[in-house]
Length: 207
Image (cartoon, rainbow, N blue to C red):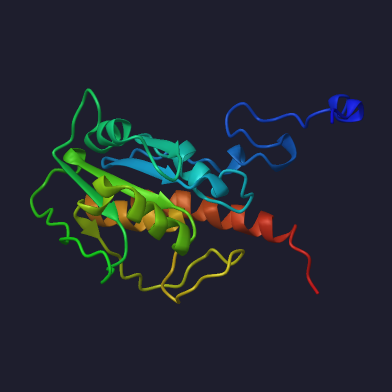
């Protein structure tokens, strides 16, 4: 049944850049970063409206990044994203932990120019990202890059299932720094991310 009162309810104004309500706009933390390795972020639909999510901030900050939302992607569209469309890259790898159930070869990128690497990142909870992997065969065949962080996550506003689990932004920055051999390049973005986390923590009720 149509509710006339709902039609008169004003919608919150959205930021045209980050597509979030102006009161929770994240653009202040977007940090222009000239990454050499291109990044494709595949975001689960349930993460789109997640205020504590980091994928959008990552996309806004990286010079070479694109973000696509879905759980089961059109195979032709996914294939285009994985190879880079009109400017294909030669080496596409997926950032994902070692997984015995769905094994894949480890990425071998020795001697490969960073500009010829395309890094695929799944943005979602552990369960959702695993489901995305199951439902998109093209992702299962990609060589994988697994991380072994030597410092704890700065992402204190979301519960981690493992001690070495990082946010999408942190994991991507660590992978890019490793692939490009440029650890200092991503420190400004990680510092901005820490400020973003601190701001989000202010809105979490404390008991």
